[in-house]
Length: 289
Image (spheres, rainbow, N blue to C red):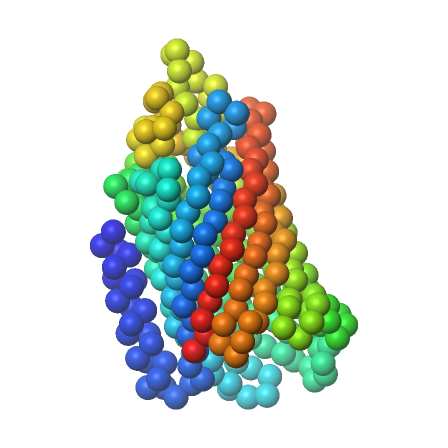
């Protein structure tokens, strides 16, 4: 958890730097609830468990315009989550994001390009196995296709390094696509798709001396998920390919308030024919300042 508190302190310092450098400062506070019907990331119904979580977040950042076509941004974010059933999955996460945005041509439908670098740390409530730091780099491109429809495409490389035992030491490559549609001036709909290849994490139960999915790189006893199952649980790392689709919308209620609603589906095809899937949804509100 110490690394997370250092990131949180960095968020405060970054806010002060933003004001001192004279950029366009922005901030956002948010909260909401989510449900995931496979929070355990189990492959079979025997060890597929759902849970509700309650979440709060804070964002502080600054934008600099360096010309008509180039902009830079620095953003700090803190997210907290509290799970209802699996309390030891509750976490605090701190993130710093840097972005360079370039629009080489004039015009309403002209494409834009962005490079992003994001680093952070996450600490869990009494679950050191999941404590880790993470970094990702992204290259993105997008454009308005019509007066209401816009799209983006990107590539991301991400890595995580766990604080203990290496179960969460992962490296992934991802294809990112997104469509946004302005239904009204205040209501925006979106569809996001992510294809991820590389190391993934999942869990399974050990019962009657039998291990259901033997293909893994590293595994370790995961006591955070055992309270509700009555059997020994192991988290493990393996090679796999995952697909995730998110569909939702955002509604600007007033000058500063907004509401968000989203649904998500994921499927992960792992080694030895193991398949993992799950559905989830979230609802939240945010205040911009």
